[in-house]
Length: 166
Image (cartoon, rainbow, N blue to C red; front, side, top):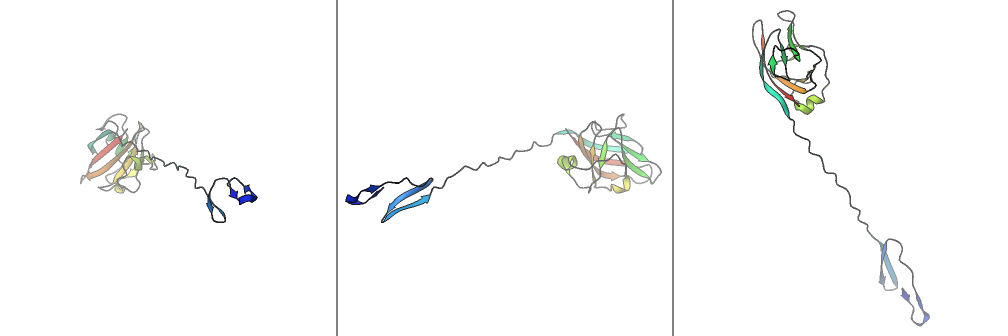
């Protein structure tokens, strides 16, 4: 409100969303700062991997092995240590299982789950000692095994350590 003495007064509303303060010779109006809360997303904490089966296996040449049950020579196995000759040796998926060689690093459950799987056999020469290989088992679980050792001579035996997740 402006008061002009005996001449009168003039009143005006402040501009929308402004705060006005009387100053010498008039008013000073500044915009109101409206603080709108910004939602902060709370990241979901992924559940830790739950192990279905983990162990080490000794797999003789020409035997199959199952990474769900953790045994060698069982019906319904996931992989076969196939030998076509003394030097033509392969790891071959069986019974609907799939394999993903990738970069042979320890990828864990999440890394293996994102791998590109195939039913194509892998030459044993492509899996040197220390390599990790991802598997989607014939029961649909994600698994990973590490080639711990390959025996010398013929027939060979593979020593692997594996983990299969739920």
